[in-house]
Image (cartoon, rainbow, N blue to C red):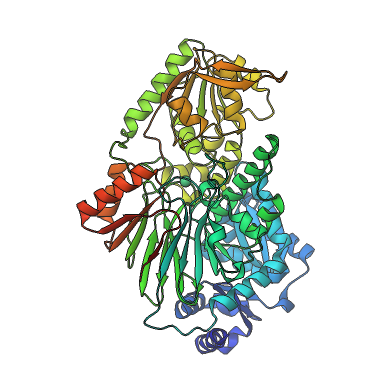
Length: 632
Ligand SMILES: [Zn+2]
């Protein structure tokens, strides 16, 4: 690996002898510099910045193994050094990385003013602190993942070294190098998003989803079987966000034997793991078998290389990846690929919201370069204009109040990640303003997902961020009661209760169970606030079906009447509506030269592509699954 030699040279040329560098290693796309004199780095803080600038890579300064003190002693010292206010929740030592992972409620206090406290930890214990934020609300899944990552740190170190070898292998690029895109799923449809970007040297998969709304054979999973190459030729997988239609099939790649890097944001890693586990669980409860097991999910976690927004990362000899804020769900990203020394630049929008949300900052619209844009079109249809937020919130409040007056209950089926938190913020705001005082239950995974939000406040809009940091998280406000474990019939006895439950399209999980219990009573209301996929029960109810065949406990089937009041309130969506999609394209900098439309129902995608091409005079197409397009 010639690059490593180059990096070593740069390190030696940039750092003075007193830094006592004993080893330089690649950890995937990052550089690890081991030193016998960490003090030298702190006396002149600029060294770290200087070397990172020279190398254009994330640089980790680690202490030489000989300096590592005994973990038990180190732990004692750390507890002495760090102020009690930091509320340390966990300390774990990770020899492979010379790292001590310190999880605390107030990580700022572990870092200290100007980094003083963390410096003291290195100097007095030899261990480099890796400081993480503890969720303010207990999260089993987050604890599980962090434990898993520590447990397998030796293996992860090996994985990162192997990954680095591939990223920095020598290739002979040519001016004639081509770039092509193969649509593997999620084109002219919503669900199973997946595509392959290929050059003569590199194959990168963008998203690997499952179609949750339609599980008939040939419809549920991406067309991986048309990839006529062994999976170890796949250079990397990029996951834009945690929803199952983008991440749900990833563990299957690992089941098939893929053992390569997965790039995504840290919250995407946690949330997709949560959703994949839940998927297996829900399938099992329905007596069906998921296409992969928990083992495959855990294997995928080991291979995740989390990236921050706007951090440029080498992912192959001829490809750099940068993730940008997509404002869709926690950690959601648009992916920018810089291919072949700038020969081609591609942005895959992923699911994005170009409009107000209570949760996130505005979607990123500035890119260094851009030739091809792949854009979602969930609400790309001519008729798909969403009302403004004030209107939607007023309507939500009115429908809830009308139902409460009739002693009915309100069911809001939501995607456990995304809409759930947005609706929780809206309801919490009603309660705080004294507009509502009815009971509100949260069932299913929504609570866990909320807890993960409290571990990553930096991904949230400032106001929410502040509240989480002040331990006043709206996701764990007192007004919300957890229904898990509580008998659902009991919940429904509370007349006038609001129930927020997943799944969002009534495809399974607690929302479906509540629906069956509530459907026959006209006093109840179901409120759809999110996208209902073609073929899902949610879509059928929304379209007004009047009866539903159900199987009773005694095995007899009967037609159940659907008398429940059905309301759809648009405007809470994490997707951009038609106007917002168009505004996104016109505000993008720079303008793309070609636009490819995906992630929308067939007619919407086609019509949207036509409209865009005539409005902007940009070459626009709505690809079909299995289409391949040469981009360069
Ligand atoms: Zn999504």
